[in-house]
Image 1 (cartoon, rainbow, N blue to C red):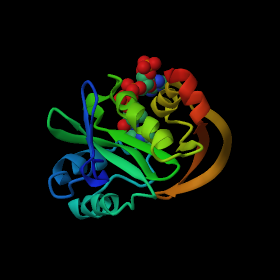
Image 2: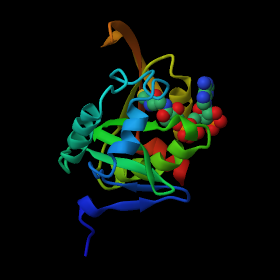
Image 3: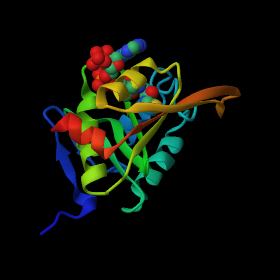
Length: 179
Ligand SMILES: CC(C)(COP(=O)(O)OP(=O)(O)OC[C@H]1O[C@@H](n2cnc3c(N)ncnc32)[C@H](O)[C@@H]1OP(=O)(O)O)[C@@H](O)C(=O)NCCC(=O)NCCS
């Protein structure tokens, strides 16, 4: 019997990746999404109200199975971030700053990427990163993503134009790195 996607739980050495639980995840995810450091290069300014985070969690809960594959990152029983594909084939991730620099998001993304190719059959995974976001760029490089192109003034966030570097990972590169 296959596990229904809504019940899917992935365990890594230090993390649990699971589907969003909008009520239970509100406090943990609002702490992350309202944090100016965590949101410095996000596609929106930091959340200023719990209602904003509630809407964000509801949108995550409504992702149709064929359209995305997104997970809450749980660490020591708490929701501390998210990792996954909100819309195929774009990957996105965020983690509480208190936990940065321990390889946790790389650990979370490994099974997510494997599923994207093996279960969802994606021909590529893409990422759109602010050129100033050195940690995210380093993370993608560690995972085998390659830069494809750049563009200026792609996002207008709180009145400031931001640029993008676009990255791509193919199943072939992923297979060669995980063989
Ligand atoms: C990007 C982010 C997810 C990384 O999470 P993390 O768990 O700390 O990532 P990892 O530890 O797996 O890897 C990060 C890598 O970047 C490196 N790094 C961290 N800060 C850096 C910096 N300022 N400059 C260069 N490299 C940096 C780390 O040393 C590590 O590389 P290493 O393993 O070779 O030492 C986290 O910083 C975050 O949540 N940022 C805010 C949200 C965000 O920007 N998301 C991406 C939007 S495109």
